[in-house]
Length: 126
Figure 1 (cartoon, one colour):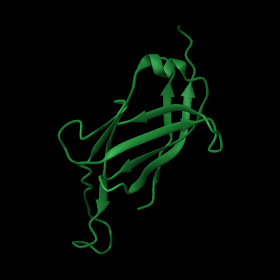
Figure 2 (cartoon, rainbow, N blue to C red):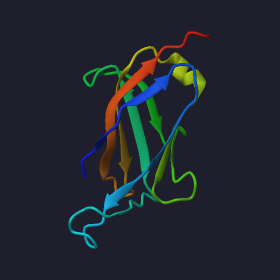
Figure 3 (cartoon, rainbow, N blue to C red):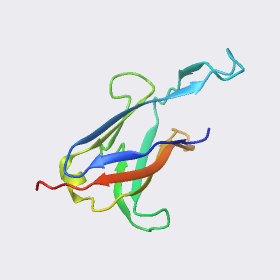
């Protein structure tokens, strides 16, 4: 599965929340790939990093299911990931950058779901 491209726009100093609903083509029922079914990620963990550039060795932001920045199946559905960045964390981000979000199965297989630019809109009120 190839990662989707999605540019994130984040307002510095605000709470950032996104809910991702994962679907995959149902190639058995519809070989054309036009029909989609839920992509069950029950039992998976997730991780996401934002860096100034792909080559930069230091992450500006690191979210995981372990640090509660990412939540798998937050509403009880088996195909959802919620991204949560509290206002104090977005206030500390100083630059736009790039990101990707990956999921890890219980067997250790890693899949990249989405990737793109992380666009920061600077805060005026502090």
